[in-house]
Length: 249
Length: 291
Image 1 (cartoon, one colour):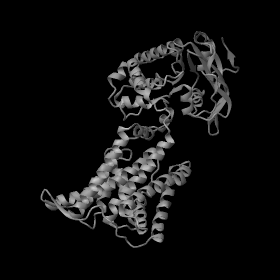
Image 2 (cartoon, each protein chain N blue to C red):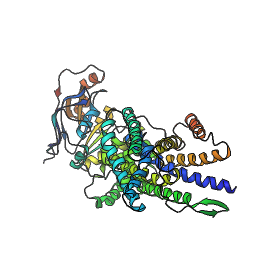
Image 3 (cartoon, helix red, strand yellow):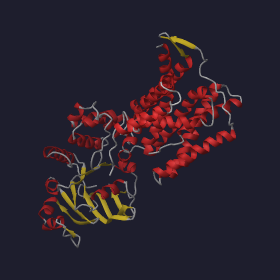
C-alpha cells in the first residue's frame, strides 16, 4: 500500500443515539502517516464519528474501511486488533491504580503477552515523565501528565492510527504545545493521527490535513493550509452554515 | 475488662461475616449497578444446599464444597443470566424490584422445600473456650475470624495483585474506558457475580452454626450488609469491610452495655450520622457524575 493511499475511508456513514441521527452520510478519506484534524461546530458529530469508527456505536448504513479491510460494525476489541487506538475526550485514567498498572491495562488486548514488559519499557523511554512516576497513583498526575499517560497507553500496541478527541481541553497553553509536539513526533514515526480540536486554528497549524464536519456531513476536506485560508471556515464557525459540500484540494 | 475483650472478639467475628456479605454486595454494585436486595437470602440459602447434601450422605467438608459450588452456579451464574442481564436493560430500579421479588422467592422456597424450623448446622471447630489475655474467647469466634480474614485477604490479593483483578477494578471504575482498552467487560462483570456466589456461601457456613439455618435468616443479614456498605462506602471494598466490622462490634457492645432491647437501633443511628455527615461513607469516594 502506498503512502498516499487513505488508511481510513468512511463512505456514507449513518450513526446516532436512539432516534437521533448524528452522522448523516459522513464520507471522508484519512491519509496514511499524516495528522488530520476534524473541526466543526458543536454537535457537528465529531466525537460521534470517532465512536462509530471505534465500534462504540452501531453503523446504521454506509461502510468503514480501515487499512484495506471492511471494519464496519467491528467491536472495539476487533478495532484494537486491527490497529486502531482511541483516546476519548476528558479524563480516561483509572485514578486509583498506579501509572504502571494504568499503562499495563493498555496491553490487555495484546495477543503476545510475553512482549508486554518490553513494550512498557519502550513506552517509558519515550515518556520519561511516566517512568519517574511509574509507581504513584494515577490520580496524583497533573491534567497534562494524565493526557500523556492516555496517549502512551494508546501507543502500547503500536497502533496504525490513533483517534484523539480534544486532547488540549483543560490544559495550560504550554502543556498543549507539549502534547502537540508528541503528536507530531508520532506522525514522523509513521502513526496516522486523527484529531478533534476545539482550538481549530492552532491544531490546523500543526496538521497536514483538515476535515470540516457540519450536521454530520463532511463540508470541506483538504490540506490544512488551504482550510486555514478558506474564508468559509469563518462563516461556518460563526453559524452561517454551508449549503453544499465542497472539496478543496 | 475480660468480658469486654470477649464481647469485642465475638463482635469482630460477627462483623467479619457481615463484611464478607457487604463486600459481595458492593462488588455487584460497582461492576453492574446491581443493588441486590436478595443478598441476605443469598447467605441463607447455601446452608440449605449443604444440609441437603449431608442428608444425601455427604460428609460436612464435601457438603460444604458442594454448597459453595452450587452457590457460585445458582447465586452467581444463574442470577446474572436469568435476572440481572434481562432486567438491567430496563434500568436500576426494575432490577432492584426484581431482587426484592427474588428474596421473597428464595425465602419461601427454603421454607416450603426444606423446613420452616431452624436447623442445627455443624460448626467448623468444636466449641470450646480458650484464654486470651485473661479473657475467655470461644474457639468458634476465632475460627470464624480466621476464615473471614483469609477470605478477605485472598480477595484483596486477587483484586490488587493480579492482572485479572485489575481488569475487574478497571471495569468497575470506568466500564466504557475498559471497553476501549479491549478489556472483556462482560466477562469481568460475570466474575464478580461468581465471586459474590462464593462469598455468600462462605458467610453462610460461618454464620449458620451461630444463627442455625433458618429461612428467615436473610432478613437481618441482608439489612446488616446493606447498612455496612452504606456506612463504609458503597464504592469501596475496604469500606464494606470496615462497615461490617463496625456493625458487628457495635451490635455486641451496645447490647451488653446499653440496652439489648434497642440493639437494633444503634446501627441505624450510625447510619443516620454517616448519611448526614459523610454521605459517601467512611471510606467512600464521591462519585463523579458521568455526562
